[in-house]
Length: 258
Ligand SMILES: NC(=O)c1ccc[n+]([C@@H]2O[C@H](COP(=O)([O-])OP(=O)(O)OC[C@H]3O[C@@H](n4cnc5c(N)ncnc54)[C@H](OP(=O)(O)O)[C@@H]3O)[C@@H](O)[C@H]2O)c1
Image 1: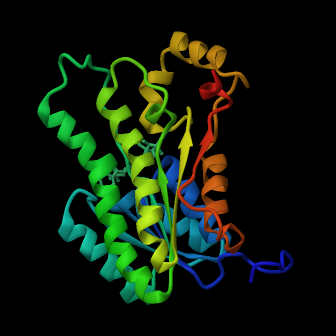
Image 2: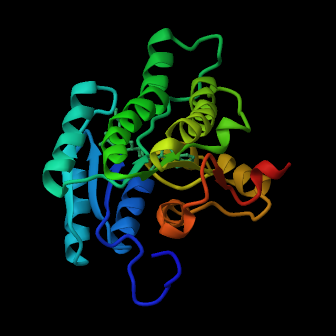
C-alpha cells in the first residue's frame, strides 16, 4: 500500500516499540502510532506511567503493551524485544525516544559519572536498542527506526556539553545505521525538536526570563508540542516514506536557521 490514502490506517497490522513512551513526547508518539493502526509497546523504567498510556490507547480502541525497561541495561533490552515478539509476533517500528538531561554544568565541572550516564541513555542505548530491534526487523523483511535527537546536536548552548554531544552523535548514528541497515530494508531517520514543554524542560521553563528568551530567540515566537513531534515521527513510519532514510527532520520554529 503506497498509493491509497482513503479508508486505510497507514500502520494497520504493524507493531511499534516506543522507548520513554510513558511521558511527554514519547506518550504523544505512542498515541499517534496507535491512532494510525499500530500495536504499540511502550517501554521505560516507570511502569505505572506506561500503563496509563496503555489505558489511553485501549480507550481509543487500540492495542498496546507496557514493558518495564531501563534502556541502559542489556538484559532489559533483550527482555523488551522478546516480550514485544511474544505479544505481537514482530517489530516493524522502533522509536528511540528515551532521553535525559542534567542541570546546567560548565564543562570544567562535568563528572565522569554524569558524562557516562547521559551518553549511556542518549546514545549507547539508542544503538543497542536499535541493534536488538533491527535483528528482528531484518528477519521480517524490514522496518523503520526513528531516533529523537535535538537541535542541541547542531546548535550548542553553554552548560550542556554532554547532552549536545549525545544528540549530535545520534544524528551521525542515524546516518551510519541508515547506510548499514539499508541492505535489510530498514530505514533509519531522526527528529530534532527545539523546545517542547515537557517534564524534561519544566525546570528551565519555570524561569520567566528563560522562557521569554526562548520565545524571542525563536523566529516563530512559540514552542512545539509533543503532538507535532509525533506527527513528524509518523511521517517516517508510513509506507509512503520508504524512500527517506538517514534524514534528521528539524522542528524548532526556525531557531537553527540563524
Ligand atoms: N522537551 C524538549 O524540549 C526536547 C527537545 C529536544 C529533544 N527532546 C528529546 O525528547 C525525548 C523525550 O523527552 P521529553 O521532553 O518527552 O521528556 P520526558 O517526559 O522527561 O521523557 C523522557 C523519557 O525518557 C525515559 N527514560 C529516561 N531514562 C531512561 C532509561 N534509562 N530507560 C528507559 N527510559 C528512560 C523516561 O521514562 P522513565 O523515567 O519512566 O524511565 C521518560 O519517559 C528525549 O530524548 C529528549 O532528549 C526533548
